[in-house]
Structures are given as structure tokens and as C-alpha cells.
Length: 542
Image (cartoon, rainbow, N blue to C red; front, side, top):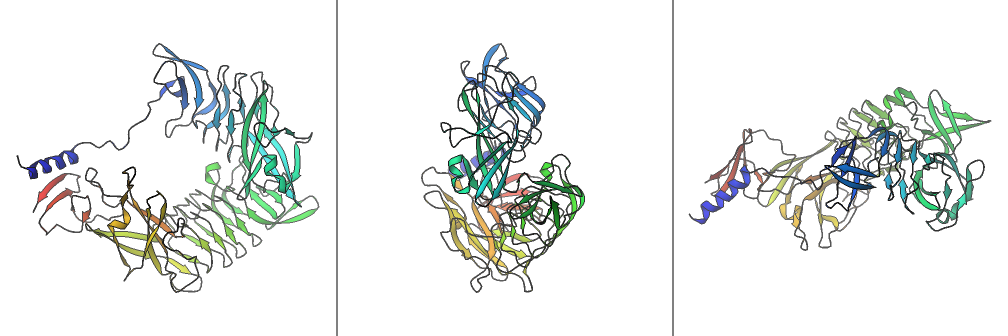
């Protein structure tokens, strides 16, 4: 049998054999409603896990030992099992020691009971949405920071609530809350008190003790949570040094048509409403608004403030707003229009990510933005027209416009990993009649050390050769600005994968032996792959 036929048989075997896209690294077992990853040896420790898509609910008690198929295992680990979980309380049984517990977005969790066997320096990390368990409000005023402990729902095995204290580290001196639950210190000393500022929020390092062992409880809060609250027409506000902020209401999430007040009264004073706080109307926390009227006093819209608001049809943002933070309107699939303010200075990363119905947008001149419109298919589009063994041909289309001006001229640039493994801007391509040709060599490369194949990225941005409206981009930039990005998967003979954005209109598809889809039936002699719409593949030789 000659080599040509052996080669063809090998290709056919690759086409017809099932491809295991990802192997499971563990196979959890379920015992009394809890999933465990069992160790490979009886002397190892079982770990509590949450399979993908599974949420624990209700009151959860985790034993310190389990029995499975006649074998006893100690339980001594938690692997992000309470991230976005739906439980109201967690009890860890006596004998449980190593605790590295993450309760990110565990919105209903109000208490955690720790056993006396808890090891020293165990950790509990509380993220946004976990305020029923641990909640610290922050007030900033005239160079001072005041922490106000509102909730600390961590208990010992005797049922007694543990006391929280502040510390800069596991061996640092205690700083205790006063009788009113306050700690005040100079803003310049924040880190020495265990408060680390990240963007517009603080990571607060609280601790508690059980049987003389210090437990680290890490939480995060925004300065907008000042502890001075007011409610008007069903909307919650917090008074800040920058004006009042609209904050989320987890007890009664916002729904339907909403109108935000221009000012609110607190005590004897009136405070302009200037901020929509992080996650204030985020659907993840239960809000489901269909429309909103914002006040002209507004200056800032926070991180993920309206994220996943599936029924929000559009937004008109007042001209006084200068900042829209990352993910502010991400996942608003019904949003067809967005009126951006003329004075906008910052439009955060992925601010409109996944707004698939957004079909036209005017951008104010000078607004800095980065990957703002990822997944906005009707706003910023890249179609793969075809590919050869050397080039990929793309067609660009855009519904992005400048306020008071014409459409924004676009360019495409490629990102690829350099020899050190760093993803950098590789080259800039400007379209001719809306078409861009990119050499395949720019999109794909193998890591010289590991041999791993990397897929290339293309990004769409403003062609600013003749304009300084948008930040400049240059080859070698590690985080260049863009409107949207697209990944072009590296074709694979075993997967027969063409670029995902190809619009298949023909009844039959043709690929070369690199897996690149051809625009028509091949006319050049060679060996090709032919696949019909039913998914059947075969080899053709011309």
C-alpha cells in the first residue's frame, strides 16, 4: 500500500473517530445531597465540590467524614462551593480543619458556623452580594475613613457569635470596633489598618478568633455605602461625600419602570443624586427593570450597574455623566438604543458587552474606551468571507457614529503571543472598500517552549491616523484600546473547524488539509475535505 493511501486512511480515521474535547479531571460522588471529590488513596482527604451548573440551597451542614463503598474518608476541603450558591446557612462539623471558603455572590447566606477544630489562619472570602453574612459600610470624610460593622454572621460551634476585629495581617495587633461598631482612622493609613483600596472600593481584612486561633475574613465594600441611608419611592440611597448614590435593594429588588430622584433628604440636608452604585440594578441580584429615568444631577454609573437587565429596552444618559464603568450595561439583550452624554470621558471595558439588539450608537468625541462593544453583533461586525492557505479575508461593518458627525472609520489589528508568552498588538490593517486581508501567519503561532498552539485575536478600532479622537495604538502594546474583539480559532484537521463567524449558505463545504474552509469547490489539484450540511465528511482528490 503506497504512502498516499496510508495518508488518506489516517485522515479518514481522524474525521470519523469521536473527538474528546475535554477530559474530566475528577468524577464527584453525591452523598446526602453533597458532592465530593474523593482522593486517590484512602489516606487522602475528600473535598466538597460543586459540579458545573449546580447550586447548593437551603441550610447546609458538611460532615467531617464520609463513607463511600465501604471506605471512610476525612472531609477537609471546600472548592468554591458557595460561589453564587443559594444557601441560607452553612455549618461545618467538628473535625473539619482546613477552611478556604469563598462566598462570592452568596446573596442569601446569613450565617457560617465554624468547628472548634478549625485550623489557624483559615480563610473566608466574602465578595459582592454576600452582605447578609459580612457587611461593612464605609464613610469617607475630610481625610478620615470610618468602618461601620453592620453584619458579622460567623459563629462558633457553641452557637455564640464571634467578634470581628481589624488587623493588617495574621500576626498584626487587633484593632477592635467600638461599642457602636465603628473604627475610624486616617485615609493615608488605610493599608496599615488592613484596608487596601482597589479602584473605587476597599478590600477589608477582618479577623475573628476561635479557641485562640485567628481566622481571616476578607470582605469588600464601596465608599458609597456610608451607613447614612435614605429611601424615596422604593429606591435606596446612601449619602456620600460626592452626593447621594442609588444602591441595590436585595430585600425588595427593583422591577418595572423606575424613576431616580434628583435629590433626597437626609436629616436637615438635601443631597443631589450623583451616582448609580456598582450593581445597583444588576439582574443577578433580582432586579428586573424595563425602563429608567435618570436625573440630570448624575455624574457616574457604576460597575455592572444595569448588567443583565434583560427587559431594559434602552437608556438615555444625562449629559452631566462623565464616567460609565466596566460592564455597566453588559448582557442587556433587549436594549436597542443608548444615548450617551456629550461630556462622557470614560466608557469602561465591556460596558455594553453582549447587547445583541443594540443597532446604532453615537459616541462623543474624546471618550476613552476599551473593548466596550464585545458581542454587539448589530453594532460592530466582522464577517469571515473566506480563507486560503495564506490569508483570511474579513468584511467590516459598523453602526458606530460620532456625535454630530459621520461614521467612525475602522481598522483591524491582530494580537498574538510573543516568545515570552505575552499577548501584544502585532499589526494594524486598514480596510479597502470595507475588506481586510490578514495573513494566517499573523493569527497563529506555536509556543516555542511548550509547543502549544495559540489562536489569534483580531480587534476592531478607530482608524486614528488622521484623528486624535481616540487613544493611539501601536505594535507591541499589551493592552491597546478597541471597540470589540473576535477570536479566529486555529483550524484543526481532526475537528474540521472553520472560523466560527462564517455564514454558511452553500449546501457543501470544502476545506484544505489545514482545516481552512474554501470559498468554492477547489479547482487546483490536491487533496481536500468535503462536508455536506448533514455533517458527513469525506476526502476528495482532484
